[in-house]
Image 1 (cartoon, rainbow, N blue to C red):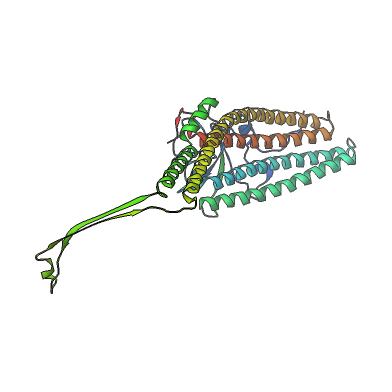
Image 2: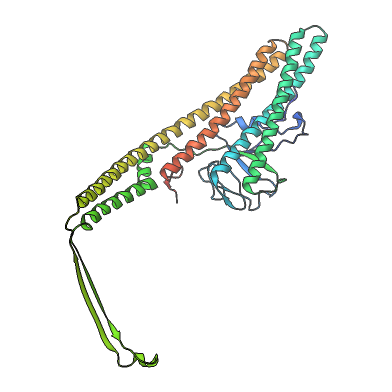
Amino acid sequence: MPMPIAGPPTAATTGFFMFGSVSNSARAGELPGWRGAFRKSATSLPAVKHSAVPESSTARTWGSASAAASSANFSAAAAVAIGAVLPPLGCVRTAWRMAAFSITSNSAASNVAINDTLFTLNKGRYEVGKIGENDLLQSELALLRMRTTLDGARLEQDRAFAALRLALNLPPTAPLDIVVVSSVPEFEADTARAVAEALRNSSRMSDAALLEVQARRRVTEARLSTGMGATVQASYGYNATGPEASLAYQNLQEARTFSLSLSMPLLQWGARKETVRAALAERDRQLSLGQSTTEQTAQDAHFAALQLSQARRNLALSAKGDTVATKRFEVALNRYVIGRIPIDNLYVAQNEKDQALNQFVQALRGYWQAYYRLRRLTLFDFAVGQAIQ
């Protein structure tokens, strides 16, 4: 019978899974289970929840990714709102760092528990002469490395927690949790629709059109303001004087003035011609920039739609790779316990498991970056099929 290996318990989850912060005094075997719930779905979105407020209250959850999400929920690239709306970019990056370090910390804790059990097993095998001293030392070295990794991961996790609390203006002792929502919007972004919506809604197009109008106006002003001109001025009113203020408004007399002035440049030394030429050159430059802006906007939207499709495929492959790597490690662990494979193969499987998990987290982050980059470029919600208001 294979020897049971100590590790984090597997907790059943539905809909989402919460990653709890890891205290320095927590033992590896007592950390909440997470891998099973995390890798069951290829579509998970980390979210931040202020756990000091019950879920049934008005506290807002960070990370709803379903197409029918309410306005109180927002995904990992939208604005953060816990008590107040905050600038999204810094909070988004901080939350993703916290999610990554939380996953790394939990994975390192699991590896420490497993390698500690393996080291205990190998000491017993070494005492009865089943393995050599080299395998025992390799097992101890692996345990020491995992402990070092766990300490570093916990430090980075605590630093990320503190940074996010600072960004959210929460007290230093406020608990935070990472929530993984197991759903992403199900849609296919059409490139032609993305280009059309970007050209219709992008502020860059409006700015380019405004600059072109202003350039044409300056051409007209240059042609009309440097030649012959005339100024007509007329005024009409009443006037009176008196020794006292009350008498100044009696017996008012009409006061009318009219003036006409003409200006004609006698010699401009080519100033008018050059002013008009400069205005025309500026107009041509703005027209060229407007055309370049149109082409660049269309190209960005086109490839943003393609990038989102690629990010979805990459996310699915990474999730599958994480599942396969985890299963392979479980098989290798059981086979090593019963003495069927050498310890080197076990550690190779463990390293590949950790790499696959990191790749899945990066793929998940890349998907949401691509998703919101397309929304930002087009100002269109492809998940619901309507413009973003």
